[in-house]
Length: 517
Image (cartoon, rainbow, N blue to C red):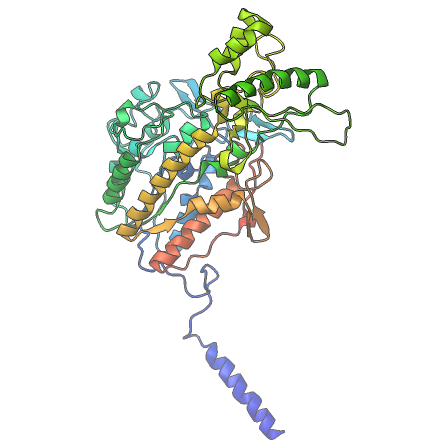
């Protein structure tokens, strides 16, 4: 018995020694329980450059609560625990969203979900673009900015807003009308930076349904339209200049690549086959017409463009789905061939009309190798009638082709993918050459779109409205989505610089913003 008590006494001494005040105490703010450290990074002056994703844009608007939940602002709160300085944000005036230029609205209010559909919140914007704020500001995320815009002098000149030469969000906090974004950032002598830019260099083309131009081979952005794809060589040169400028004084930083646009609900929510079974007579008439066009394509050695449409069988338990009829400008124009073939049957006037209507039309494809993407913004026109054609050729998506600005065709999606891959290769190479932390946002958001990402008892998905990853505009993250992204940035910083920041609990972020904030 005496020996047993002695043993217990020795154990007690050992436990007491292990918990002495001289030993490190577990830190609840760190990822590993050790004392929180910045590692080799210096966060005393953190500046974030980018576009709407950096600004905290959400629900098709920029507003105060969205800006507070931006990933740089979330990161800055963690940095403050290890000596990070003040992080100034060019806050909007309200939580309504929208912008005024000379008192005239130029950007609408934010969206909210009313239980049935996304709608705009009530109220009017109160943020006047020409009321310039006193800076400098640490969050330099500028909604709508492309890579080369960050180097453009005068991008903050109010006189150029309506002509597209300037950005209203930058006008609000540019150091002068002639300033450029990079120079304003470098003037702050950042010790640490984040850079997430390039999404808009392909996104504007994609969200417009490929209505812009692929500028590959053209390195002159002065000749670009607002919806064009940026030349990869220009992008690489611009990105190099941005990183060189930000690291001039030895600043460390973190960069992220560009997500695949097909990972966001703006392109994946509306299926390619949302048309229910048609009345038998309508299905029969269209199948005869489309079958005749298929015979023409077969005769000239081209793939068939149309599928056989399914009629409503009258059984409520049966699910019949027909593909959307879309316009595809990449197709060979068969207008003349269709007109010639149908003239004996329909007469020259009707045959000419039908030939022009279906010369570059086809049914949308859902096959992985030739997937078309129907834009979220097209939901309101599917199945409606148009005044552009007489009955029975006037039902949009059924007998009247969905127009180019409603669909990202497989050929257009391939152009976007090629450019995205080139941009991401440049980002990864430049980040590696400078020893910067790197966030693979492309892989992250593809995972959200496929399997979902489970954290803290929640699974973040890209399902529109309910998935938790994206806001109601279908492009920008939700509050929880921004929390997930902030955690990925922090994880990359930990890996590269030896810090040990603990990520946010995703359960602390709401999925969507309510009507009132």
